[in-house]
Image (tube, rainbow, N blue to C red; front, side, top):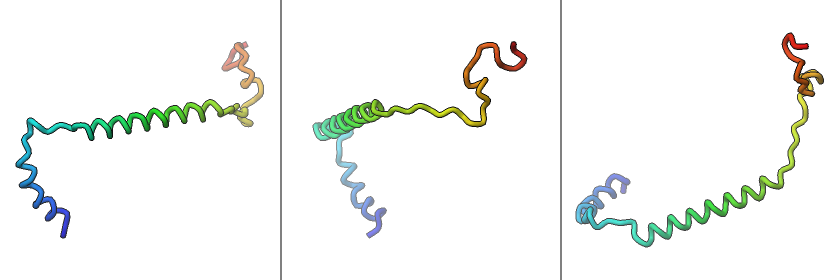
Length: 79
């Protein structure tokens, strides 16, 4: 049985539902709350793991040491 044939059997069932009475209900709230708690736990874990990162970027070997020091007067035509 193809998916389109299965859907055609369900169409008459959908027409019997009153559009004014359809709500997500308790199950929808439970699913939404579970997703929210899961996202909160993932964010908490991510923040904990990111706090452990101690990264200091190595200077680029192609750049001259004078420009890496960041002296204020050095630059294009500066004294």
